[in-house]
Amino acid sequence: MSAAAGSPASKMVWIPAASAIAREAGARLREFYSQGVETEYKGDVDLVTVADRAVEKLIRTRLAEAFPDHGIYGEEGTRDRLDREFRWYVDPLDGTTNFAHGFPQFAVSLGLEHRPAAIQPGEDGTLVAGVIYDPLRDELFAAERGRGAQLNGRPMHVSRTGNLGEALLATGFPSRKRHASPNIHFYQEFTLRSHGVRRAGSAALDLAYVACGRIDGFWEFNLNPWDTAAGILLVEEAGGRVTDYAGQHYRLASDEILASNGPIHQELMSCFEAMFAGRDLAPIPTPQEYAARRAARDA
Ligand code: IPD
Ligand code: CA
Ligand code: CA
Image (cartoon, rainbow, N blue to C red):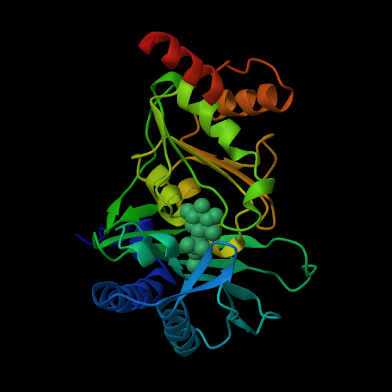
């Protein structure tokens, strides 16, 4: 169903063209997915496929046709017109590891930043539009600043869950420098304090799911602007909150993101604060302790 005539959503400026591009890109991903693709390694376990590159090329062409004055910053290397007032952050395939293994959770993500003339190179502009498209479920999540957020054309909202104990959360783990990530500790603690933590392998969809209320909160270390630009705006326009772990305004270069429905944000931040300070950590058996207990039980 399309937005009612005259409603803010019906006045969306960039979303109609960006949605068409995301749908075309998603259709290409579906074709590659059904054929199966060869996988290469960008790093340790950082995978890339022919689909990532071909779909970024397609998006780059289509964005340049639709918005010739806009810049494009893509995961697979596109760096076009970065001096312009508007800049698209493009992740042609968020969830490459899933895609490569035939696990059905991946998306196209397009986020638009407005960068006024006086802005410094390292400074953030304002996110003004975002589209995330899940080609396997045919779900298109879209938002423009001040005009609300939609899932397949219907208004979408964050959940109303009021406390962490009743929340369903999501997180992800990096594919680069895995040994430097502390996230397994947070995964453990938040698992014990909530209904559970999903780790589905697409940060863009994790954020889209916070925006539409399927997930109440999401955090991750070391994401990139192409992973988060669209999703941040979706969450904010759907009524949620996005900060770093200490509640500071989220920056695209930030190495920590915390997104939630709003009501549980303070509780999530308090947990981060306590965990970083080494307080309130729940003791769990080490594998050796568990093995000793098992051996005693079986003796
Ligand atoms: C990855 C996914 C994953 C997240 C990784 C990202 P990619 O993006 O968003 O959920 O945990 O940190 O790198 O590489 O599939 O585009
Ligand atoms: Ca990504
Ligand atoms: Ca990607």
